[in-house]
Image (cartoon, rainbow, N blue to C red; front, side, top):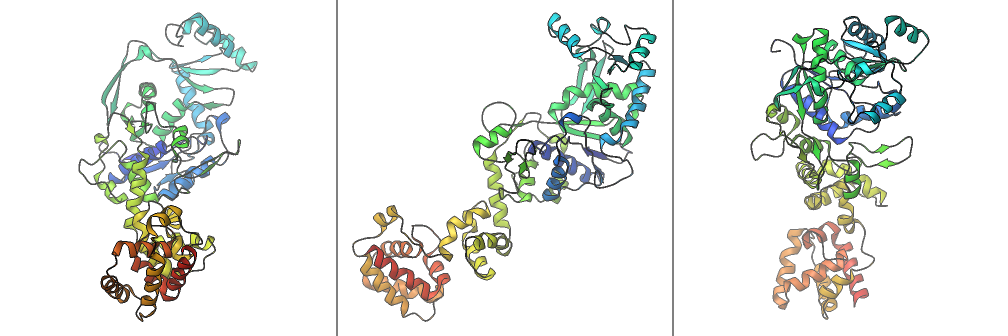
Length: 505
């Protein structure tokens, strides 16, 4: 394997939106390929025509574009190993089905669904294998003439792989080491169906990986049970020398309780499990996405990278390039990774702090405009600088910051009861006179003058500032008072102060 160029692939089925677990699998493939100077191939596995969902393929491509995970070749990217969509490779697969049949490594089976169901009822834990295959309707129990006649008559059939019992199958796994499985527990998997003239996942997967020169197969833990079959298929074709090295990634687990992460967990706890918002073309249901929920793609990538792997240090924030340099697939956990969605929000907050005020202001400006406020980018950037450390998402800024742009029309009752004292109206009237006399209304111009006035009057600073905040903001929140008043300017500050005195008395 060492002298071969590293080639990995991500091969989703277009049966709906891309689950966040699939995104992590793709990310680990990407990191592995980049680290080894190899290629990352994008393949579409659409052999199950009954489950095809329109728009799913475009959705998957758009998701990776948003996340910044790039492919070197594949569907929509081109390359020398195409076509990369399995439904366009029918003739290729037929050739390899014939090869297995001619070599006695597979056989044709005519069993109807009713016959299979009857056999399951008859035999507990029925499995189509060496113990039962000779009780069934297939080319092992029929003459070649009978088989040819049935096919000529248009009878539907499947091609099953002939699994020989008594073999120790070794799967070389970069995470789990040498995984040994007895062939006796494997069933004769269906490799091809005449009904749609398409192979199943098992055959198409092996043929494509071989022809596309895939060197490493990095996929979810749920595919581990099929790995021994894939090893046997490589042997059946005589491809042992090009057999890829496997890595089966740990499952993403529910944030709480047992079992793997599902969409229901996201719906119940209020977090997305898809990269982009998904509109189901059949039901019309809309599922939330990380992009539309306000996550930064870099934060999602950073969060996912550490679900099941860590660099062995305390560092948590990594650029994609840093992840490429540090990633070691052998250090992935064998145990499932609990999906801590709140940690995902923490990552987004950290990336919010890392981004420039100007960058966040560009994202916040449309929200300001949608709330009927015509404001300059310079002033929106000033607000962002004061407030971005208090939120995890840009969309959370408006509820916290609206008072900078729109004067309060009412005052929070609890804050009024707690902060507006009997003498507050009088004191605020005096403060208004002090502020009106200040020419330099910057923070530096206001603060020493007001502080000296408070000291000279013998007022409690907390009482003055709390009432001042209530008058300008309408509630007891926000940054420093002189930051607020300097931003509002003298005219707006005095207008709000006098209105509060009038309303609150």
